[in-house]
Amino acid sequence: MPKTLRFLPLLATFALAACGVPVPPDRSAYVGEWRAPQMTMQITQDGHVEYERHEGAMSKSLSGPLQGFVGDSFKVGVGPISTTFNVTAPPHVDDGKTVMTVDGVQLQKL
Image (cartoon, rainbow, N blue to C red; front, side, top):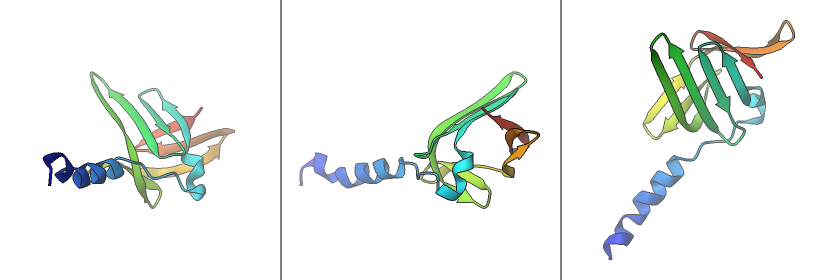
């Protein structure tokens, strides 16, 4: 077997693992752009998440596929390399604004 063909199954497996799962219809309220002064998050219907958080001089960012929901929380990453975003208040309307609390930060949907 040629060398290039030996790696084809591995490459196909990695490509499939990198694809996000679409946001299920019962979680469609999560889709959109969310903001707080120290944090932004974009969740797309097709299952891609962009995240950025600033705490003092430190900042964190992540861009990756949605792996799925665990209760109200959700996992983002590729294969075993993932991060769980802890949602303590799922999307809901509060004082006319749609908000949710992720990792202790209340975000407002734009």
